[in-house]
Length: 194
Image (cartoon, rainbow, N blue to C red; front, side, top):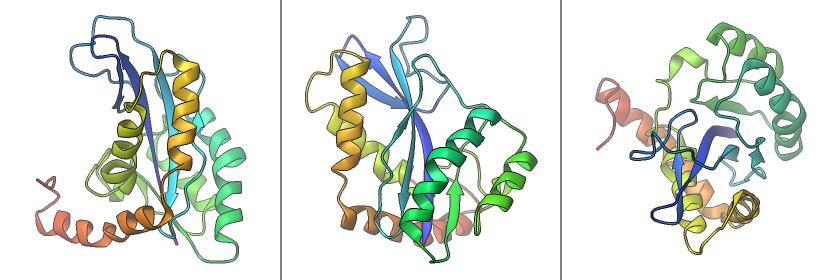
């Protein structure tokens, strides 16, 4: 079983009255000089179709650091994975910078995961290879923009609800496309899919 992880920040676009997904520590175009409301979220899905309840960080947090990453992995993510995977073998894949040197991340993952894709094996923030990017975040963003969400509390509630509504078979199908997408990226010498 594979577990795919990613983090995103959702920013309030006051002009359009909607929430936009963006990689942490980046604001959407046109919002650079305006103070923005945002919430950073850590999400995990599995190739068997399981969806971890999203971990929502404190307001104002723009990106992870090594200490917070280790704490969230140890207290939230790994217990959930062990519960879901049971005694099945599993592999961890994340394609984001977790605020510490890659060697330190690899050492943490090596001592805490059954198997993992080392940080230097994937291009950072590779949207073509992580179903969190090419499937989950778009679905969450669409769900959030079905209605007006007035504030961060409403956003947090809507995010939790949107994650809970992700259908197991759709998550499983999105994860099943990982290997085919990986082959295409390798064949194109690491270029993004079009």
